[in-house]
Structures are given as C-alpha cells and as structure tokens.
Length: 298
Image (cartoon, rainbow, N blue to C red; front, side, top):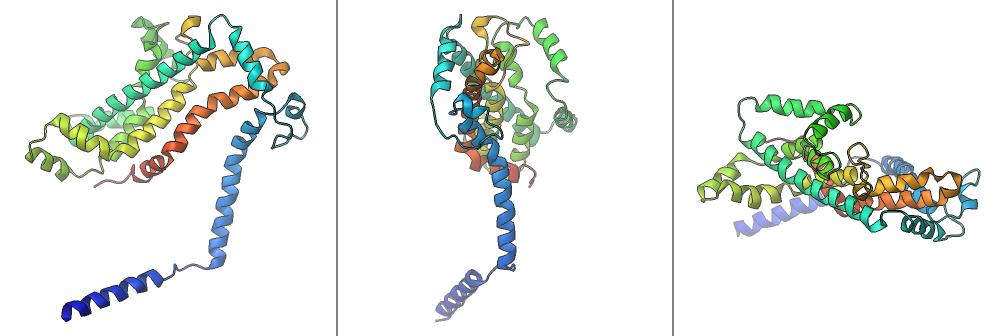
C-alpha cells in the first residue's frame, strides 16, 4: 500500500514538472524566433543565390540589381562547362580522380593519426605533453599563407614535389583535428578505460572498440573540415604536372575566360561547393554535438 502511494506521488510530481511552463513570455519567444529567423535568412542568402545563379542564362546573371531567384532556368552553363573540360588536354575524369584521391586519403590519414595522438596526449600524459598540446593550440593562430614557404621547403627537401604526398601527408597534421579530438577524448572517464583493461582489453581493442565509437561526433566533424579543405585545394604550389592537378585548379583556369564565361563560372561555383555541403548536411548533428562538448572535461 505504501509502495502504491509513493508511485502515485511520483507520478504527480512528473505531471507537475511536465505542466510547468518556462519562465518567459510569448513575446520573448517571438523576439528570439524573429532574431534566429533573421540570422538564418542572412546566412542562407549566399547559398540560395549561388544555387540559382548556376541555372541562370547570361542575361539574368548581369541584371542590375541582381535577382535572387532564376526566372528562366537553363542547363546551358553545365553543358558549356563539360564541353570546355572535354576539350582540355587532360580528361575531366582525371581531375576528379586526383581531387577525390587526395580528399579521401588525406581525410582517412588525418582521422587515424590525429585520434591516436589525441588519445595518447589525453589519457597517457608524458613529460612535455602539455607543452606539446599548447604548441598545437598556438599553431591554430597561423593561416596557410604564413606557413606556405616553410611547407614548400620541407616538401621540396623530401622530394615530394609533383606527387600526391605533397598534399596528402601534410593534411595528416591539421591542428584543428588534433585539438577537437583531444578535447572530446578528455570527456571520456578514465574509469571506463580502467574497467576495460580489468576485463582483459588490449590498448588496440580499447581504442578501436571504445574510444573511436564514443568520439564519433568529433571525428565526423574533423572529417567535414578535412573534406572542405582538401576538396577545394588547388595544390598549385606543389603540383605542376597537368596529369596530377586537382579539379579546383582546372575549374579555376576556366574562370579566367572573362565575362563570356560568367555562366560557366556560376556552374563551377556550385560544382565545387556541393560535395562539402552534402557532407555537412549528412553529419550536421554530430558537428553541433562536438562544438557543444569540446570544452567539457570530467
């Protein structure tokens, strides 16, 4: 009887909590919604404009003031793009293969090496590990323009110029990837790893079966950053052979044709942005989770 009374009182508390409303007015909710909607429109405008621009004929592209939405959609821009690429000395499929290979190889290598390094620094600190991590954080302040000359000297000294390695291997050391993975691994309790060791788990098994699944949002976020960087990499500083050049470099050459290729340029813009955009749309929930938890520690 006493048990049933306690259950009843517990259910009443649950119902009271569910019925309890947030301490804010409808006007406040409407104001917040308006602000968020305004920011959403502001950030979505360039994307919508770029998509519509790719399907505009030339007379609509040069309208003043420019129109956001296309009035007479056409596929001529994409047809002209493929005609131009088919006339190039190297086939269009070769440029796509080069970019896809660099993107896939660089992204996989970054996730593997950055996650292993972050796991060691986070859970097995060694003498100087904090200084090493601070050094990695410091490198986040430097852009690619600052490190372009040292990178070229290193790549040239190793004899990697005009090879895929000149772009793929440096991508393994992206500081942002190491930073996000390390911060996310910090949130995993040490007791979980100790329990796995007591049960007989080896370091490799713990890393693959426990750590990697738990940090899935983090390495998916790193994957997005890597795809965005490598898919848009021109690699013109390291690769000079036409057979090894990337798709963005080849498409960039098309844009040098002047005003007559404005429609083709709009198609190029959409073609280059569609792969990173699609990857982000698939994994956006994991990206949000990573940004929300990257600074939380046990």
